[in-house]
Image 1 (tube, helix red, strand yellow):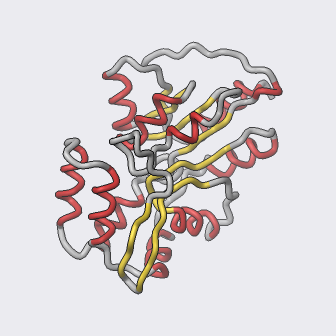
Image 2 (tube, helix red, strand yellow):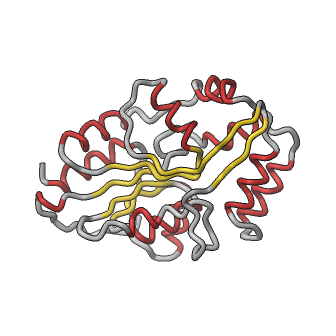
Length: 225
């Protein structure tokens, strides 16, 4: 792991925390499981490979994959009940709320699904910045309210939310290729899987994490609370 030098922060400038959703808050990738279960064809695998190879943008990939899904909102929510949430998520967001640390979810998943998953588990809600999803029966249409025209990589460029914070240390936790932009905009990065491999390959500092308990431990120390 690339070492990271900690810096102290004053109480009035406690950090802001940003969390990816799929495979960060959840155990495993929610969208991948949805695509595997409800895609009408095998095309989702082709578009995923094209995206990973950099031949299409995240927006194009998600638009094409979503267009191929056949599932109602009710079916989708029931399916998501079987997906595990990191046990450290509830304690983390409860602690940050109690100690005045702004915490947000920034995701390439869909806002309606993230909200439903948290509410059905009685987990605390925090601000969620994610893609839009509209249903017409079992046909779906994605929208991208946080698209950044200046970013050719992302459907939802999560970095824009981090760049909106200038007076506090920005902490980000994520796992995948869609987390590269916010990782580069953060002051402290918790990474695993392909995000960790990317940062390691490019000599970028990060902290490896296995669960959100690791993030909570660091935030407690950084906030000096």
